[in-house]
Each structure stands twice: as C-alpha cells, then as structure tokens.
Length: 292
Image 1: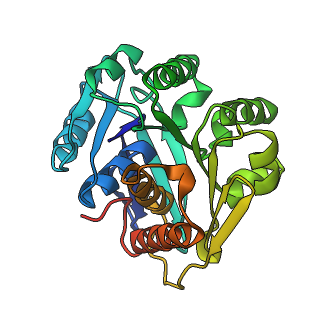
Image 2: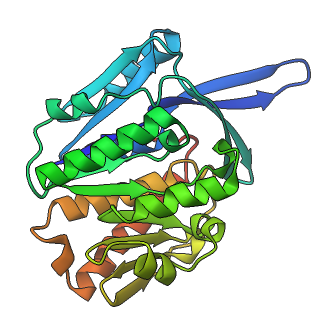
C-alpha cells in the first residue's frame, strides 16, 4: 500500500481577455496528483491532506472523492485553502502560490492508516519552507522508521518559497539522507549544483534509489553502483503540469507491487522507466495535472 501525504490545492489557470480575465480552477497538488494517478491506474493508495472551510476546499473534497482511494482523509482547517496560480509558456508551467491550509497536517493522523512493513509513504515538498511543515516531515520520517515502511520524496524544489536560497539547498540536502525512493528533476539538480551521481553518492543513504526525470531527454534510475537510462518519446506538449507526478506515480506503483524494490533486474528497471515515461508524456497532452 502507498500513502501519499501533503498538499491538495486548487490550480488556477487565468486567460486574459480584452476587458476581463477568465479563471479556471482544477484540483492539484503534487502528492495528491501522485495518489490520484496511482488510484486511476488500479494501485493500492490512500491520501492525507488539508483544506480550508471554504468553497475551494469543498470543491477539492468533492473532486477527490471521485478517485478510488483505499482511504481518503482531508482535514478541514481554519486556514484558507491553498491556491497555485499556473502560468503557461509553450506548455511549460510556472507557479505562484497563495499558501493556506496545505501544510497544517497532524502527525497523529498517520496512525489512521493501515500500514505494514514494506509499504510506502510518499510525502510532498511544498510544506518544507514552513516550520510546521518541517516538523511534520520529521515526525513522518520517524513514523516510517517505526513502521518499517519506505519513505518516498519528490524534490519538486520550490526555491522561490524560501527567502534564502542557501537555506533551501540545506533543507533539501539534509532531507535526502533519510529518503528511500527519491525523485529529482534536471532543474532540481541544477539548483543544488550537483550531478545525479553526486547526489546519490554523497547525500543519500547507501540503500536508496534515485530517479531523475529529464523531460524530453528521458529518465534515469541510480541504485547501488548501477545506472539505467531510458529515452522519452517526442510529443507536442499542451501543459506539463503534473507530468512529473504521473511519472513518479507509475514508479511507486511498480515498486509497491514487487517483493523487493532493491533486487530488480536491469531489464525490469528499464521496463519501469519506460512505463513511467509514457505516463509522464500522456499527462502533457491535456490541460491540468489530471485528465478530466
């Protein structure tokens, strides 16, 4: 089973008209997108997040209930539902965030999910620039160790949320040391100022797996002393929002279904990456992180 925890928010798309701006909201948030993709593909997954007691939160809860999660737990907080303002340029997206409820999560809620040794907790990164979010991450790591479950993390680095860029680097570098399954993009590596090999060998624990998504250049996996790479197919991108989430969702689903993620053959790893690349590419063919 996979438990995905972290932000669920409203992705807001704006379209400028001569005398007005039309706005459209879609459900989003990286860890929610991961969970929704796994559920849609028939995987065994649950989700925990937080919204506000407002119309946006009500909309997100209604939309979330449409997915076949094993368990869905969304806290209604006194804070407003978080929003992500999405800007598109030739299909490539950028975000501005209006933060609210997304990081107000309770570590005690993790006990409401039936997790066994070998299961996976996937946690989002948006919370990390907030003290409360950082505490939740630390508690989640401790809970994962106590339960004997794997901890998964997508760097999805939002350096703009930190006032100090060196602080951001330090936070992410320190987190890597406790992660079992880590996903990084080329942009993440560029911000950290290191190669995938440097990240894996110097910042991650020995028994861990690093996945690198390289957009149109394919993807890689680094495990032990091995490195496997698979190309991506060429597509016409409509909206890249959620592509990395779809990519990693497929990987986590495949890992959850095998007895030992650390004993897969080279051929199996290439098959996993190929499927993940295909899911990531498909997510780029429609507007929004999730297909409506």
